[in-house]
Structure formats: C-alpha cells, structure tokens
Length: 362
Ligand SMILES: *Cc1c(COP(=O)(O)O)cnc(C)c1O
Image (cartoon, rainbow, N blue to C red; front, side, top):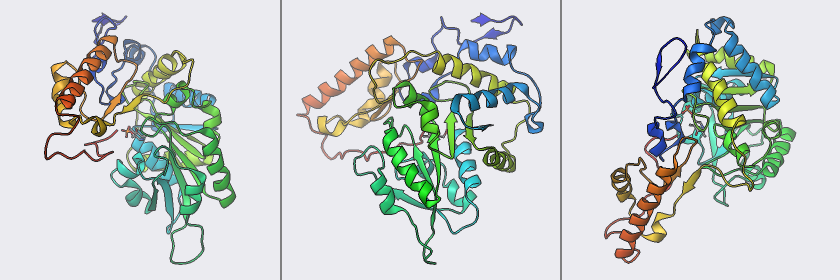
C-alpha cells in the first residue's frame, strides 16, 4: 500500500499487482494506477461542471481540443453515452437512417439506443473483407433518394479499431469525401482510437479531421476509472451538452473523474512506448474451430492457470504482466494438446460457437 500526502492509503501500489494483470477478457478491466488515484486528491478541483465551473474538467476538455484538433470537447460518463448523444445531436427529424458496420458497438451493444433516442432506422452493412467497410459497400447501401418510401441516410458511423482491426485511413478518406458530397455526417466511435494511433494506424488529428464527431474512451486502453469524451464543432458540442443534461449525464464535482482521465492520457497514451513496426492493436481472435479446440474448455483451463479468459478473443492492455503471458502460453498449449488427442476435431455433438456473440460486450 502506498500512501499520499494526506496519509490516505492507496491500493494498487505498483509493487502490488492489480488483478487486471492476469485478465485477458477485456481492456475494460484495467484499474486506475496509483498516479491516477493520486490525481483525484492532488489535482482535482471541486467546481460544479453543470455550471461549467470545474477547472479540472474545463482544462481536460481544452487539452483534448489541442490533442485532437477539433474546436470543442465535452466529457461524458461512458462510451455509450458519447455515441448516443452524438447520434442524437447530428440527426434532426425522422425519417432518417444511419449506415454502419453490422459488427459495430453502436448497433450491437448499446441497447438499441439509436432507435429510442434518435428514432433512427439502421442500415447495417457486412464488410466482404471481414475487416472494414469500403467505399463501394457504403455507396451501395446508402439511401440517397427523395422517394417517400425510404429513410435517407443522414449519418455514417464508423468504428476504429473494430474487433482490434485498424481501418485504413485511405478508406476512411474515401468514405468521408463521398459523404461530404452527399451532405451525410460522419461519426467515429473511437473508443479504441488511442490503440490505433499507438499501433501506427495514423495520426490522431489526421484521423479525427475526417469526422464531424468522434467519441474517445478513457477507461479502456488508457485505464482511467471512467468516462469518455466527444469532440466536434462548437455548435455540435453545445447540442451534445444539452442532450447530456437531458439524459442525466450532467454531473457536479466531476473533477474526481476528469483528473485521472487526464493522467491516463499523459501516462498511458502520450507517455507510452512506440512500436517499430505497425501491428494491429490489442486483440487476438483465435480460429479455434480449425484446430478443433473446444471453446468451453477455455474458462476452466484459464482459471486453473490463475487467469481470467473465457472465449475466442484475447485482449491485452497496459497492465498485463509477463507472468500472465507465460501462463497464457501454457493454457494455449494445453488446449491444443486436448484438441490433438481428439484428432483435431471438436468433441462429438459440438458445433463451433457463432462468432461475435459475446455475453456482454465491450
Ligand atoms: C466499450 C465500447 C463502447 C462503449 O463504452 P462504455 O463506456 O462501455 O459505454 C463503445 N464503442 C466501442 C467500440 C467500445 O468498445
């Protein structure tokens, strides 16, 4: 246990490993570092953010505008809130529709929010390359007609990274150029855009410049306790603030959340190491079926080894330790041995699990 100037004991001292060090399920499990916790006591101011009077929060928002190159930023409580308020703020009155990747978070894991909050029809598109949408696919699916039968596409939502895969900046540029010609707004769910930039998938400002709005998450790869931020033009962000208040997302002394968020960016993103060679980001999707590995064996084998890991996706984050990687290798070896003993076939009567059906995502 470390203690700070005020003598309050801080859990999660670097000498004590966080449980996240052995957890491969998601990067949402990262825990605040001692300096993030310290920032709550030593940096956070206690002004009321609904009155715009919390300097820590105002400074974070202003720091984010410098970092992203957008004129305005607003702190929100979660990535879902950031996406949903952005969608609500872009769209005016139905009929209207949103075009997006069928596998994305907004479509699958936000409780159908776009239908409820924005009365939007969704046009989900499945990318043929299995990785990212292309302009041709977008163009083929966009609803671009005055015909009264249709709900015209007013917004395209992309996600980067999606399932850990980077969307090439060139493809984003093609889609955005097309959307601008058509008067369609562009939103980016950039919950893991930090990972894209860290992995060499483009410059933060250059990627963000292609979008009318972007939401970025503090609590996943960066490891802050909570929160996301939405960036865009002044008038747009003002609308987001209005809707944030409407859904109860205006908070009072939120310096205790924005101080560690600032520390998280400085420490984990700006202070992080660089890769020599670009790699796709922090998720590995295993093709278990082709090896005959039974996915149901994973949780038990992982638990035996002292790990948390439960299906075909492996997620790493800044708190995974070397020892956990060694243990993961052992588990993978065990699973492969079991499969080999069955002749590389799944146990009788078992079918491969459907892809992208996790119990709750993130
Ligand atoms: C986790 C996630 C969100 C939602 O974030 P919450 O803070 O869990 O609401 C949105 N988009 C993507 C791509 C995510 O991974």
